[in-house]
Image (cartoon, rainbow, N blue to C red):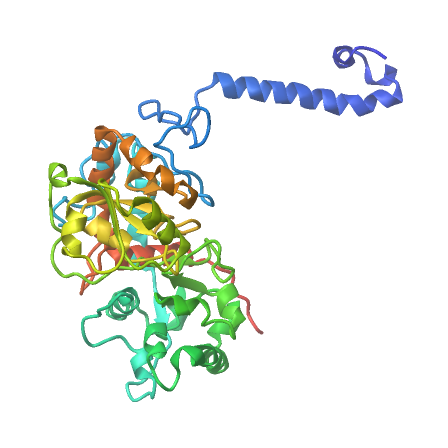
Length: 459
């Protein structure tokens, strides 16, 4: 048989029939070699030559770097290059400036990629402005004399408690320009039941929520045509208490089709569908402006305090409870919680019963770099924020290496992380009324990203 290279020069008519099998393979080989040559000799259009990151090796390899903690399901988090811009959406004092122009993001429109607290600041800004102009939500109406009005209507007082995010969102939404009374103009439909309030209702309680939700969906799908058009795909609900995970057990179509905005957002849970659903930040209510304290006044390396209600926390306390640099406490603190956060460089968010706690928002509020010890946590606003620019994720198996990881972070890298903490913390705060780029508007943007679906007519 002739050498494969000769096939390109011989007339097709003169080739034996069995050579036609090798011709496509030969062409494919030449094409592959050309593509490889192009890739290795052409600068990537997706990498800025001004902001290249150094490659880091995973922990445990022969060239391990303590700066590359790994988060199992959504890739490793690593320290980004120093952020060269000022806070584009406001100062470090927490004030929010008017919506900036594109010039704030660089003349080429992509200078923030991979180094900013956003995945893409240009896209976020353009989408955010469009969302504010056009996004509309229809809320299923309920009268004030409804027997369950307390669960359907927003609170008439300031929300409080560990699960206040659910109430803050509803209160802000119902008084916002996003609401439309014309369902034909709606992009999404809000199911306004409150899991937290139903849980405390003696007529329902934790054991009756599943039946309550099932009956509610049956009622609105009978009374209104909107649910049936999409099977609920353009509907959403909001819940912060972990009982919300099981609340849809008797309404499978809600769990499978509707958008779930929940605090307990874990890839590991079968009831949570990443990219369809979204994470709601769990935020302890605070009305004061965030405090400011310099890095030099933070004399503790890391801090954690909380109940020992999970194997992860048990392991953390076992290794570090008597350490002089990593303060791992359980039970009641002898000093104010806020003082401990203000005095620590890194603050540990450690999985308890669920992946979520309010500790990430606590850390950000007090200017402390969060260390995330919660495998499979779909972090809040992960579609928008570049978490590797202001936090470190550590897989729970690496708890014994925690001090090595934190000590390996240089002062410049820490300054970059903490500077970005001060930039993003406004996104993890609730306000009444809400202000631009706070937690309410960030959740609305997550919903806006998920607004598109195909509506099928029953005609």
